[in-house]
Length: 319
Image (cartoon, rainbow, N blue to C red; front, side, top):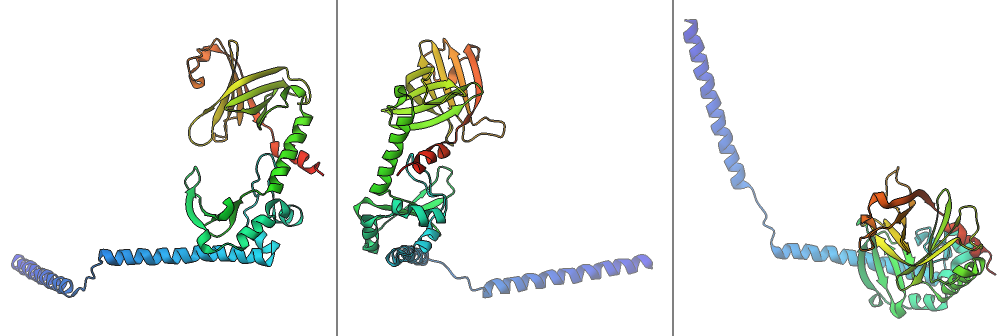
C-alpha cells in the first residue's frame, strides 16, 4: 500500500513539473513575440559618430577661445593655471618650476609681443588639430598650430603642455652656453650640445655632441673640476639605442680600447642609472652589446649628475 501511494505521488509530481515547463515555454515565446527589437542602421551609427565628433570639436573650440580670452585679458594668474609645471624649456635653459616663478620672473621668456599678437588675433580656422601619444602610449596631447609657425600643445583637459620658444628664450639659451663654455677647460669648449655628465667612484665623464653624429668623451678624476685639463679626450663617438624606453649608450674607441657609457633611465631598482665599461681588443665589426665579456677590463656603476642645478647656476648668474 505504501509503495502504491509513493508511486502515485511521484507520478503526480512529474505531471505538475511538466505542466510548469510547458507554461514557462509558452510565456517565453509570448515574450519573444512581443519583444520590440530596434534595429540600428549604419546611418544611425554614422549620425551618432558625427554627433560625438561635433561635441568634441565644440569642446576643443572652447579650449582655444578660453585660452585666447585669457591672453586678451592679460590675466597671468589664469594663464599660469593652464600650464603644466615644470614647464620644459629648450637646452640648456632651466625649466620653469612653478606658477610663482612664471608670473614673477619668467613670463617674458615665454610670451613676447609677436607671439601674443599672433595668438590673440587668431581665428578658430587658423588652428590645426592633431593628436599624439607619448612613447609609453598613455598620455594624449592635442596640438594646435597657429599662423607663423607658433605652436601650443594642450592636454585633453585644456592645460598647456608646451609652447614654442620666442627670441628672448633663444638668446638666454645662447648666453648660458657661452657662459658654460667659458667655465670649461679650453680643450673642450667646442661643441653643439652637452649631453650628460656621469660619475663613477673614480671618474667624472662628460659627453658632448659635436654635431653630425659625432660625440666626445672627456674624463677626469672624480674630484676634479671640468675647468681643469681632462685626463683623456676621445672624439668620433657613436650613439646606440637599446630598446624603446630610452636606454642607450655612447661608444668611444681609442686604439684597441673600447669605452662604453651606458645610460639607463628605464631600469629596475638594482640597475644603476649609468655605467662605464671598458673592453680591450674587442671585435670592431661587432655591435657594442655583442662584445665578449672576457675582453672586459673595467666596469663601474655610475650616477648621472644633476645638470638642472648645473645650468641653473649659469642662468642665475646672467644679467
